[in-house]
Image (cartoon, rainbow over all chains, first blue to last red; front, side, top):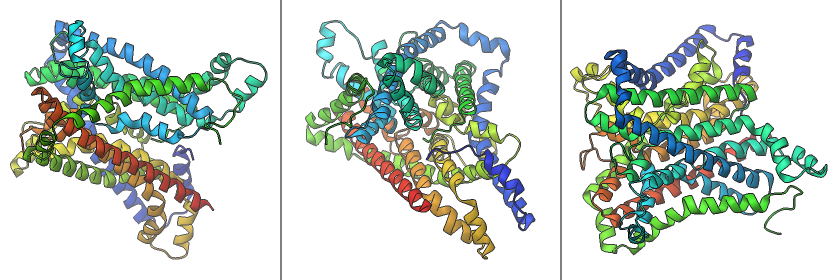
Length: 291
Length: 278
């Protein structure tokens, strides 16, 4: 049961005969204002405050925030992390959705539950598990130290924690989409003699490309914005292992509000861009995901 | 019956193999490390950490605040979903798209932004202050942060279910003389209830584990405004790996129960819908 867009209903509503019109109008007014007031207080005001504070001391102060070398290092580390994590989870998402949506096998729903697991787990635990494995007192801690390999408090730890947290996002977009689209065209292609890879690239990929785009974008937004898990494994070394969200925390705790909110404004813009692309993808495909 | 149904499509071995390998390496093996670490730790120590006054206070806070936040979301999430599905108004599509904002926005950003708005000199804080209402650095602030991050789960669960409600049934009921409240209770609520319960549970599960947006607004006083995930971080900073693992294990158990509940609720919703259509 795929959900439909809700446009139909509003059109339908307009053509419906007006039953005690005043009550309906009042109810409509009440619902809309309660919804907007709730969202304004909880969502719009905090979003606005990010930009108001970031630009509060003028454009010069805003852009000066980014000339700081630690801030630049944090932005670079965040980009590197996302550049490693997103492709890996994209390949995983494609493989998982092919195996799950194209075939019937025992334990399929259990496998889907396991893939969803990282979403249900606290981000702190997502970081903790890697500390328990690779930290100084962890399983491989002594061995790693002997061989001079650092994972925790270094880039590999940050990458692993981010990989864990953003693990399900591409797969979750693609599995329902591919299940909904069915296997007919792929089976036709194979019957006509196309190879597996050719079928994937020429038949499946064009069909799922918008869902894939959104999955990748969402995975990227979560990778760049992850705080809890990365905070546990990073060690908070300024200029070295601080990602953008961690750097925001440090600036904020040092009362450098303009700089903190200036870095936060970049991540907010990333979130806005993510939602714009999501909306475009939904209009393009007329398909609404169920979460 | 064999493990898998026959199919002419290729690539099952490759994709299934890669999926299970990657899942095992990235997710399952590390989670096993957590369980094994807890099991290998001295049981007295595990019990001391898990049942300490500080831990008990943190469970109370994490669960209480999450329950309250999920309940607020159940009410307002339903109202917002209803507004978006049933009414057309200028900006509806933009509002609809913005519902996912808490999902896309990094938690550190929502944390500092909410704190700024609700602090004593903030936009809302300065009007609440004269009434003696303190939001930032109290449990109220924690509830607000958890409400924000849970909102999309309820709205997005309820929206498609509301769109499925059969309008002709509502019309028929009203023609036959049923009042609005009766129609809501007997037709709308039963259709939406499984989705509402799913959204509520998802929001609750997400809130219990939330860290980033809470620690900025919470004040983080032991026994008062210290959430369980923060206590894990503190144990870890003290190099008490066993204690951190034990607390993590408790939270992991809870996550499993939540995930199971969500799956059962979704199955209930599907059965209900199929039943309705017969």
